Image 1: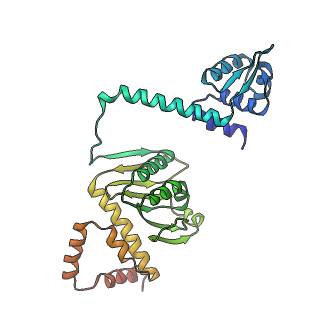
Image 2: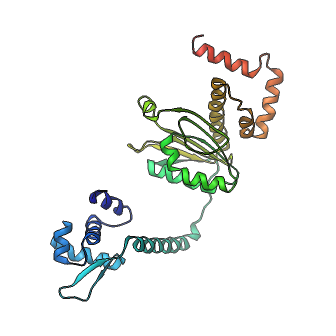
Image 3: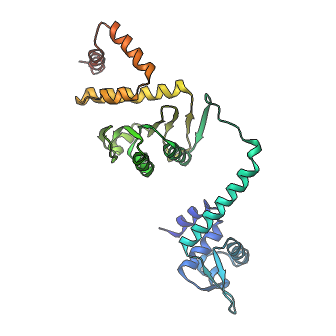
Length: 287
């Protein structure tokens, strides 16, 4: 991976560009004096003293007792362990200082999740909290990014029901996929995700990794039910188009009140539901 790209990723951990380049340069050539480090890393000589001082303060670099003084880098694995411990300690410090301000999430409020990375982070967080069920409508790119969390949830006994127009590599009895080529669909359609956890929490929106889009996260019961029914409809149409029995999955996704309503509708409808949906599909396809 190019050094500049590694430096950009290190900036997300709190390093400056100069600090990242100096650390990477030391990994490649150590020990090194400040002059050598400036020359090898591209960090200006006017900035190398302050850069080294900050890296020493962080613990990423150590100075040797030599003349002139030379420096060596902390191995990456040890650096990450150090940063993780420091970050956790800082989180606990801030958390403790804010206990007096703790408030609960309004159950009916719709929260905006801005940006692709935040969307993925929220999806992972929700999946990790799942206790009973996960309903997921997703494209392959995002599915792969959530694969570890999904696998862990399934090992806990959480039921996964997944739908996709693209091919997915998940292992579950309730996977409904048209297995279309993702690049073909991208020509006319944007990536989307609907994630419902335990029939009470929803994340839904465009999964755009190029532009910062807003997604919706909520505990609002009505919106959660609407999103769930959207996935149910996609699975139902998948079953009709592919002659697959999806009745058990659809029933499992419905809440008790939905089942009672379905019984009432079935008893009063002059045309069986399957026949009605087939007629709709035939009209849509001009048959």
